[in-house]
Length: 323
Picture (tube, rainbow, N blue to C red):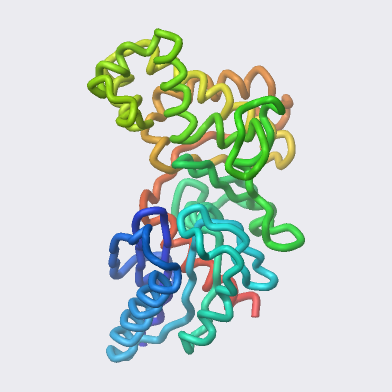
């Protein structure tokens, strides 16, 4: 009998679900888009339907389902199984997600924050494999993260620890979606890069970026800034340099606080690695404590879009091992 797990990654635009072996091999994947204008209930009902279909198909082939893990963007009270906030699915706020899955699925379902799932996936099968002390950061629309200490995910009193995107880098900085100001997220995310590009254009030094988008400010995105940087535009490259300096400050805080062996960076913005990693490492070299900065490695994620699937599946596997 083949044992299997199911991992689901509910992202900003897509849901990815995978059938995963206990050894971390993905046997089967499905992916479908999210209707961001729809209700959370409809999204979750579709997710449940797909999870049940996948598990039933495997069970009919004499396979044994160990457990299901679901990673969802947002702050989740893991003790009570309640979603505090979800940036992608607004009406999930206050939703009793654990009770929902218990009512709809007969098998145990483990809920995980998506950035934690990314971190666990990279630790299980990716760039942090073999590490007992490491951090994971996802640079996308925002900045997500997870922290592993002595092989265990740091959760905090309510399961809300590891929000590295909301460490304060500069107290008088731009407003953040969390309600604070000057968070790492407003300096090192795709949204931050777009803001810096628009500010450069307003100062009259972002002509290359403006030309690239046909003088249409609505088309300015972090992806467009990256494209211009690849074509040698100095201002676009300087935006990533600046972003790297701020990201470096965030990593200095993580290094000094947690003394990690490795910090893994993923997400769409990490595609611009060559344009920001230099200023990241320079900032760490200048500002981090001597001992920890000599030990730590700053590395790119390896699992790509599979990290969330793997991490969600690993959460289910870990829950079984604990019990």
